[in-house]
Image 1: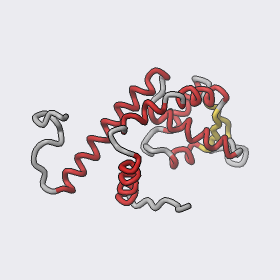
Image 2: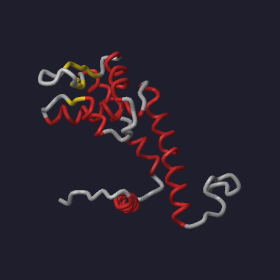
Image 3: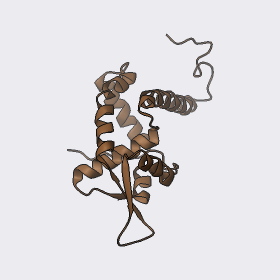
Length: 159
């Protein structure tokens, strides 16, 4: 049980919406801390992991490469310095980059076999990371996802 004297959500809020705003910020930081700890043994940051996952998805479609500007648009944290993150991943051999043949200002990025292997290794432990939301049932998680999607205006495709 949370210590109500020190819990950041203890106390009085101007409205339920005010408490929700603070709760979302608190929860985001709480979750980022757990993701950081999960990725630390792999020497990856969350934005680097996000790039690798995006590029793996691109690899699986057969398209292979994405420009750094397309990567930035698909990232969770669009304020990240995508070029610098990609350079760090290149230095580790996890991705490769090459100038685009149609537009020399553009750089195309592709995941390498080493990047795919690292993601396979990380995937083996993802159940442990998913356990951080284990206090919620599947139905709770689906409901919360639907509420959060509605909050930021995302309308998922229906099957």
